[in-house]
Image (tube, rainbow, N blue to C red; front, side, top):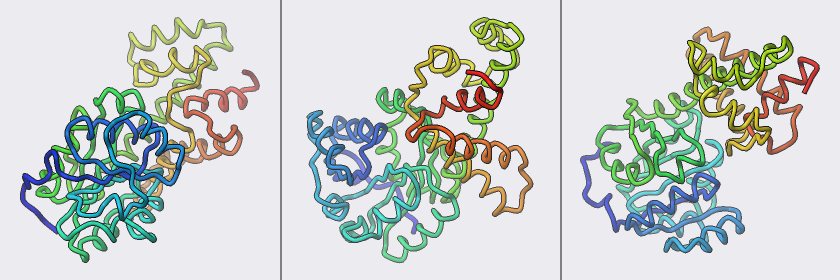
Length: 306
């Protein structure tokens, strides 16, 4: 399905928003604050109650279909592609409520090839799909400074740009449908590999007698500098808080997506495979709900220390 820029995708157009987690709730709140007519749904009654208590002005819906009735667009912000498919095509799903010509914007971290199949099924119903996952975590969701990676037909991306701009700082057009989700998975692979390397360096250096705080300072002034040395090592690892707001389970899932994509394309990616496997082992070893920065605890346990 293709489409030209549509003035209807501007406030106060109706938008369904499904998924009110730690990032979804502030994103939906930004839309409501921006003048959109927002109808929200989450399977968790507690999430709906918490969002309602925030007083955003968004309307609570009884189902995705109810949220989508007559809406110009529906946004999903869910844990994975399986949850997105359920929200779209399950009982009381978005597809039951959206009128022909409406858009689904999947801002979850889904599998790229599955996204393309979803797009084909939606197109058969006269509905468009844009994949627009985000990067930046809870803080940037709250600050409205998320980096958004948008894949899909250029006309459809143009139609939903005002929506995306209301939730993020920069919208990067990545190409055909599925490329946004591919970019998100590959970005998180690079991020996880950098964090893993940072943790291993701190563990080895600490064992040798280097001061971890000084190590972070030197890394940030040297060629080893990366997002984890700048924004995670001191803040969440050395502080012992391990509270970045992004779970280890979600990172491990994104790493599996990146490694699987390489396999589906018959591209050798030994680092991606190795990193994914290690994070899956960490997921099994650590407590449920562990923050992704707790990969340091797992690596320290392998090294025989805290």
